[in-house]
Length: 116
Image (cartoon, rainbow, N blue to C red; front, top):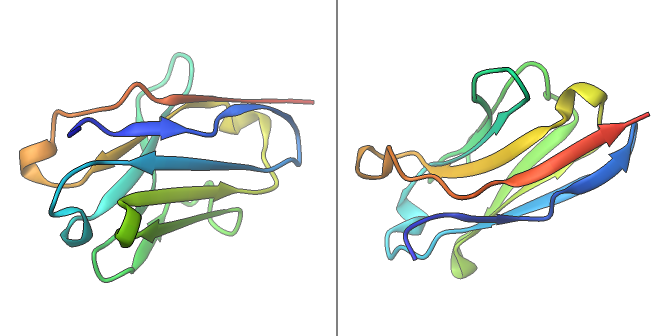
């Protein structure tokens, strides 16, 4: 399935943790950068973290030091470990293959709700 499938969202209290998972069934998975995005209510979708084929990583300033992106190429999986969650992290989270051929392919996303 080319469309990413995200899971692991839920409702947590401020300061809590969640681990999001994403799988994409493409043969070239290990060669592709994968990004985690989020869309908060009333806001544009934004890039949260990206992991490249060489395992280098980039993070949005707002999540630096709290979120960790990782990948398991053997199982076509990408993870987003989210710690010390804040109310402003509330959003629908999506993963995406960062490649021109997949530029318009999005999954259904997974909802993360952080409350005090």
